[in-house]
Image (tube, rainbow, N blue to C red; front, side, top):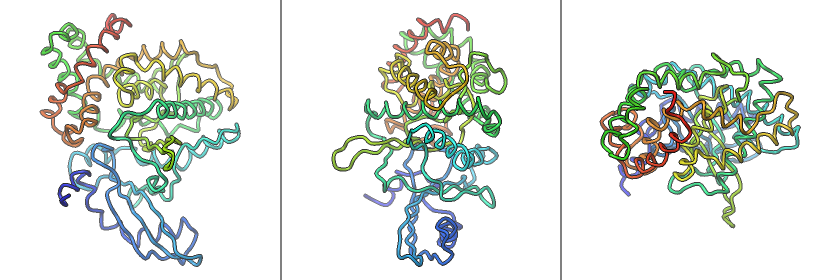
Amino acid sequence: MSENAGAEQFNEDELVAPSWLNTEFIEGVLRSHEKAPELKVTDLKITPASAQGDHYASVMFRTTAEYTTMKGKFTKPLILKTMPHEEGHKKDMLSNSHLFSTEIGMYSKVLPEFERILREAGDSTKLYVPCVYHSMEPRQVLIFEDLVPQGYAVIRDRPVTPEEQKAVFTKLAKWHAVSMKVINEQPDFLNDFQYGLIEMPTVMNDPMVTTGMANFVEMLSVDPELTKYKAYFSKMQDVYLSRMAEVMQEFRKNRQPDGHYVLSHGDFHLRNMMFRSNKNSGAFEDVMFVDFQISNVCPSSVDLIYSIYMLLEPEQRCELGKDVINYYFSVLVDTLKKVGYKGVFPTQDGLWKEIHRHKYYDFFLMSTFMPMILAIKANAFKMADLIQNNDIRKKVYFLDGYQEELKKLLPKFEELGYFKTI
């Protein structure tokens, strides 16, 4: 493989590490983490940490440090995450956001407390990978243990197996349950976690978001089997983004007495999960969630509806993830009981009513994110091109598979009455 061909696997801004990411910096990080002032880095290898399409809201590198201490020679594989440093759309979109302060809070405060609560209930579920270092000044940086040497990998070239999917929703349900207990018993503990997708300073005005419904309606005009739905979506074009925002901000601005509120992951898609199987038997062992940059308190439906479009397979999507979401609910209730939740217990019927009530989040994801994620899964386009170029985005609405899914999904919405009150 040529050097250029290999480079095409990675995001362009991750091909060359910034000058400050050097031996001196990593040596200081490891001296503090290992509590070994004599530690000396003897070799440092730096490579891109992720593939095209895995993420957009950060720059990531994989560093393998060889070092010595009084105890001997060691090797430490690390993942370093920082803000975009190159001028352009990515830096403009993200530079004034709360992404890093949110994620630092998740790793340093929230996830350790959530695990503590689970341990007290006799549950050994691991919610996060250890954070080795974090800072906001002079630059925003997070450093974690690298999960790849531990046998974890991102799934890119195949569907998730039923066993893997079950593990994903088991872990999400446990996380959500513990967060419900915390919200109920320590209402101020999560006050800082109020910055979801739409609180990112430029997102709601970004063409990637604002052109989605127009592109969708244009596509509906072309396919005779879908044209009947054009009137519904044309009618909502001026309001659907504000209605979607109402869903995501409901906890903060319009809390409902029967709402199911949790600390959400916020970006719950397949590339934000790493799976581990036994290297000898191939048996599945664990899934680890990563990337908590837009975790915030909101309805549980935000993670659940997002997973329908960004994680599930087409046949599950056309049933709105009924089986896996009902399974999630069973684990949620079981975990609430185990951790001693003292609030009003959610009901399965109530959860589905909330999901249906939040239909504008469906409409947003279906019209704007779903075609792009299908294109990325198919390796049809680069993520950066999709985000930055509307002419390219228009093409994804006509890729094989997307329209076929709509021909099953839109009748399902009609059956549920989603179009009656637009």
